[in-house]
Image (cartoon, rainbow, N blue to C red; front, side):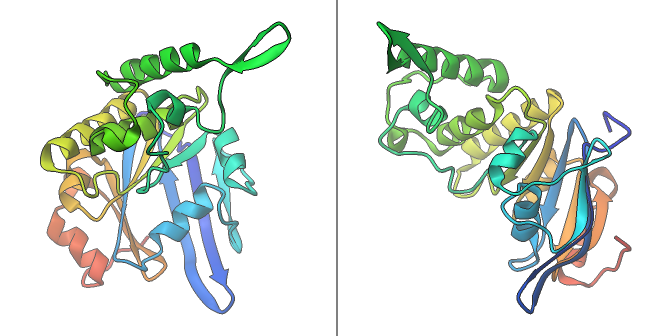
Length: 254
């Protein structure tokens, strides 16, 4: 680990929806400069756990700490202010808008002329180009192209750039970032994850692809039936052991 102490600690997290127990006493730790993969079958609790971490849901019981201090979030906006954001599988891009417009969607930059505010399209474009190149090593040849005309990997880069534009971002959740991507685009996206890890972010990767998980992760957190079935170091395990934890064939204290 880059740091001995975790950025984020989730402790004994429970989440109930009426009589349904979605999470039961789940612990999770994420460190600066690491990729923590979260795996598990559909319905294992991965999405619920991440929605608690990103402020979308509030835990029924349990605590979340950042840098050892209690962290309370009542919304996703609270999480972003605290330095936690997510890039979901849907990417939430407006297909008819270009890269810069998507990157600043809902947070457009403006300038004043004669006391009247105007969109500062020039600055948004230059900032989008800067963040894509400096943070992700990506250069879009056509910044004016609508998002719908871009490749899956380019769209993914724009969504990531939107999250990392915030200078105080410390934890980035990536939900199935390589879903529906071809081999070359998948390789580029995994390279983006490595790039962000090297910049000291804590990356939490949710993926059904164990190939991707073993390619980029440092640790693997396995969810099963709303509980943590185990946490293993990627370089000390193999796919068979992880699959065993996913289906319940292997047992490990969480």
